[in-house]
Image (tube, rainbow, N blue to C red; front, side):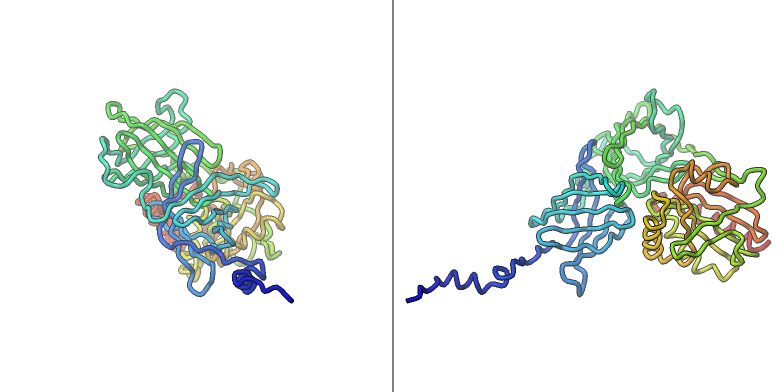
Length: 417
């Protein structure tokens, strides 16, 4: 006589997961999360907005939140018990185990084919403050411009190599640092007592700033932690008149050069050259950039739709990408991914590696390439008329608005000639 199996055993045999070995993926609670990376300088907080993607199972739409910026990540997916948030443009990702209202895991960034950098990551659902809840009392107000010296050896502002631009409301602080080669994008944080705390995470920029304010001397003194292991001390002095060097004088055409000459391949196999017919009798903008560069992405986010609106006026635009690898097999897909992300319909060629010395050799008509991005304006006769080093992105507020106004004014002038 055969023995009968217990009812519990029969039930287990009938369950699909028991038969197939498959388990139902975990679900992520939708909403706002207070996320932190655990760095050498302490917790680096930022916001995440995670929402299920309509019509796609186990897929989520994710935004990183820094100040006024909602930066879209690539589509996130749940695999078993973990959420995977790729940031392909910057070759990084957030991977975290789902544990109710909490995500725990790592941020990982690829540096080479064999090497990655990682930092511990954690996110708590339902919290929307940065370093400390809003409304806590403060003893200082940091709104305004601050002449800044990153890397100060004396503890004083010996060299102004950046300008801090801050806006404080209560204990909530936003702003950025302007530098001769670009800005630090959207920084968000708090004033706690007499101290400044600011942070930014966009998948590439990983910045944490801390400083103590001395109201007697109107001085901030602290440190900046960048990425996995970067650190630099900084000092800032309140100065409403603080200014940076003229960005139009850092890179220029050599006296021996008549115009900008280049010839580089696109990922599609075509070669783009300044002598191409498409540029003849056109006002041409040359964008020196890299797909790895967040400031370049800010500029591209401006230039791509601007070009669509203005190209019929007799304007051309070309991007010269300096990537981490000079090999098209490695860098071509990154350029294509960037073009798709920002809907770029002007040519972007691989010009070399992102080492500034190598970039300068690739464009020998220039004195040097000192920053990514650098934007070169060429008139209808093929003459270089203006070179702007760096880019003040939308995180800089009025400085971005001023740049856009000056940009359009220059283009109008060149078109009218």
